[in-house]
Amino acid sequence: MDRNVLLVDDQRDILRLLHSTLDTLKKPEIKVFESPSGEEALLHSSRHKVDLLVTDYLLPGINGVELMHKIRARHPEAKVILISGMTERKVREEMLNAGALAIFDKPIPLADFLDVVERGLGLVQTIFPPEKTDEKVEERHARLSDLLANFRQDINASAVFLLNDRGLVQARTGKLRDDSMEVSLISTLMAIHGASLKVARHNHQETLDSYHVFSGGDHDLLFIPVTPLYALLVAGNDLVNDAHILETINALLALRAQVEKSLKSLGVTGELHVVSGDAKSASATHAEKPADAPPSPEMEALLKEAAKKKEKNHDMDDFWSQAAEKHGSTPVNSDVISLEEARKLGLVPGDGK
Image (tube, rainbow, N blue to C red; front, side, top):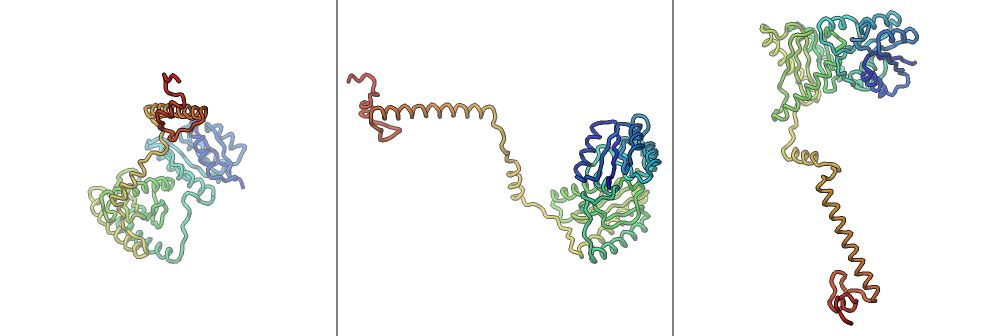
C-alpha cells in the first residue's frame, strides 16, 4: 500500500534535501510530495491522502502547528514531524504540546530523520535495526530495569535509560517530558560518548571515568559512560541544584558500578585498548601519504625538460645508427667508438681522403 509523505517548507534547498534523503530508503511504496507553503499543502491534502506530514514551523501564512491541526482534521491518522530553527520558549512549548511524532532542530540529523520516518510509517527500521534477543538478554533487561527503576525512585527522577553505542535503548524506566525529541537527544549524547572514549584513550585511562551534567531546560540531564559499549542517561527536575547535586552524582556513580558489574557478568568488557606509539606512528604515516597528488608547477617544468633531453638523446642515437648502416659498419660499442672507426665512417672533419 502506498504511503504519501508531504514535505512543506518555503526553502527549496530544504525540500530537495529531505526529498533526496527519503529517496535513499528505496521503497517504492513511499510517494513524496512537496509544497512551499501551508496553503498549498492544504490544497494538496484536499485532493490526496497524507500519511506523514513533514513541515517547517515558520511558513509564509499559517505556521507548521496550525497546518498540522488542519491536515489532521482531514486525515486523523496522519503522523507529523515538525522542523524548526527557532529557540523561543513560547514556540517550543507550542510545538511540544502539538502532539507531533518528532521535532527536529535545524540542521536536521538525517539518519535520525529517516529512522523516525520509518517508524512513523510502520516500515522496517534500517538505520537502527532491532537486536536479536534470547533468554539471557531478556533476563539482563529485567535485572537492569529493576536497577534503573529503584534508582529513579530513590532520586525522584523522571526517566533513566541504559543506551548502547548505537543509540538503542537497552533498558528504561519513566519517560522524557518531550518524547518527540528522544531520538535526536540520544543521538547527540552518543556522540558525546564517543568523544569521552577518545579522551580516555588519549589520557591512557584503563576505564571510562567521566560524567556530563546539563542543567535547566525541560530537564536536568546527567549522562555517564558505563563501558565503551554502554552509557546511562538520567533526566529529572532539580537533580543538580546546589542542595542535591553531590547526592545525585554519588548515587549515579553507585548505579554505574552496579550496571557495569551486571554487564561484565554477561561478558561485556569495560576495558579500553590504547593504541601503542609505534602503531599510531605507522597509522599516521600511512594516512598522510598522498594519493595521486598532482605535481607542482616546478616539478612539471623539470619533467618537460627531462622529456626534451630524452628526445634529443634519442635523435643522436638515430644519427649514429644511420651513419653505421650507410657505411656498412656497426660500432662495437654503441656509446663509444674509436678515432679510426669514426674516420672510416667519414665522420672526422678535415680528413682529406
